[in-house]
Length: 232
Image (cartoon, rainbow, N blue to C red; front, top):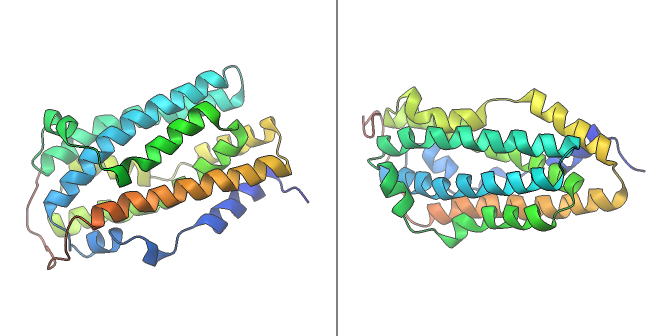
């Protein structure tokens, strides 16, 4: 039996939710066990990811122009633009200016997610893509919330420096409702639901690969408590 759009989103989110143990970096950030240099690398990789994701979402918006999906993807693209504007303060708190952000070499494991989104921009079925993205937002938002809190607690980062993570961690119930409306308007059948699971499984895997690639760059360190490093 085909589920309602709301039920489908909830089901896919529950099925694809990663276990806490699968992310090797966020628990270490939560305990203050990573150096500021690794947060700098995270910011540099996100600089490439956000710029790529924004363009991919605009391509999806153009593919779905004059439909609810087109407006939804355009809204997501606008959000990426806002997030990009919040990255320089985070980078500055880690000792990087914007040219240094752009000069950092891309890491394959970190850039797999935007590569998959670029593929979806050209090839993805729109309803299935919305299902997959919405499922991934839950995990990404949770990681960002933990990271923002840890950067304040352990590293003394200011609100301005944490604004990038705060942006993605903030609940967006109106965006959830818009996604449900897009799925309803586009029609939900067994094929689209299966494709949404397939897309979502890849996105969640690449999400974890991003964090775990960064985790592999640094050995476990002693807690960094109220160090004052990286104040913006």
